Figure 1: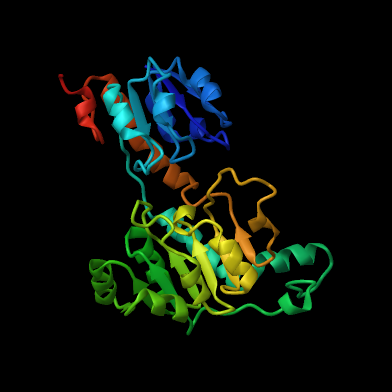
Figure 2: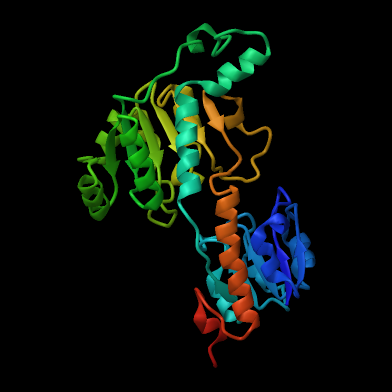
Length: 330
């Protein structure tokens, strides 16, 4: 098959052990993103299969209609709103979903929490400019960081990643307060965490609040100005899930108002994040470029599954299809 792998920003996919699975196929790896419908259509028109790295490229109905050779979309992990499934199905394009692992994003979440709470990026940057034990040149921000033990870790969403982060919090001696569905709260309580009585309690009592919700119609913009205004002035909001969980503009306004006092973010509404983004101007915001899943072992798992789905399709035995009706006899 003629296969394209999209948006490999670091040119690392062809160096993975699992890349050898595609030997014998014609493979093109793109290391930069094409912008605009026409550019994407020209780039992708020759290919029979596309391997997507998470949600880095959106495949809209308009784009899919311009890809006459496309037979298969192989997703690393799960499809999450960036592919028009109905349009693909109507055009007979199969979508194969892969598998992932919560370890890398959970560990990054914890790394962000520790770095932000102890002000590590600020101390490190100022040390390089000759400032000893200086978190900020602004007196009001030149304060020591905080230990985690004895503080409250709030978690909204107790899935695979949320559960791991909760375990890290308990290991560090934190009180872990969980909000989510009734089943999530019951599972959290069974694991030794505390189920919040309300969303308001979660935001008001958390010293660190980490979001671990799936993005969907019900959760888009679910964190708004009212929730953020309940947070403590020294609280940290962490989002390694989806930027769209927070209502547009709400976090920017909340940071300017001083509640929460800090944020650690790995996800953004526009990616790659523009250099002039307001979020990058805040000294109390720790930002990473959506690297929660960008880790060697994680990539091996994601791409091994995605490549095996391509091979299965090429061999006439498609598997793990999100839309099997796309290839059913009509």
